[in-house]
Image (tube, rainbow, N blue to C red; front, side):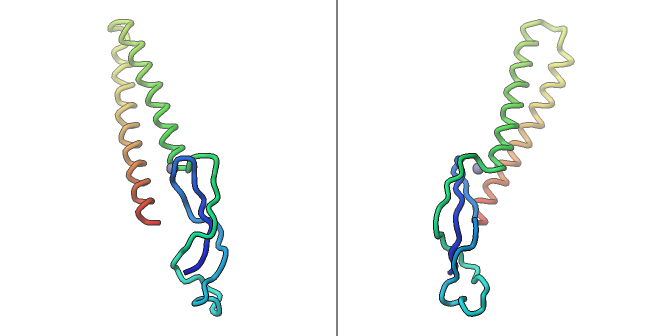
Length: 110
Ligand SMILES: [Zn+2]
């Protein structure tokens, strides 16, 4: 069991940071044993890369939905634009879902 820092992000996710200290078992070989223990938790003021990506896509999606609502109030003249926007929202949904799955996978693999 070797000691590492833990970086904790504002979103609650975390990742391993710097290696700090060997355990007795692996001290002589100079290698880490693969069992990681937390030495100190370092708070990180921002969200992790993945959550930031999700946020960005969420904002994009919200803006797109607002556009659709605005166009709908204008009647039928924007129907082509509305269709295109719906496509964008759909693909953003898929991407957000994928990122969410990736986040789950990452949480399980640490
Ligand atoms: Zn996160």
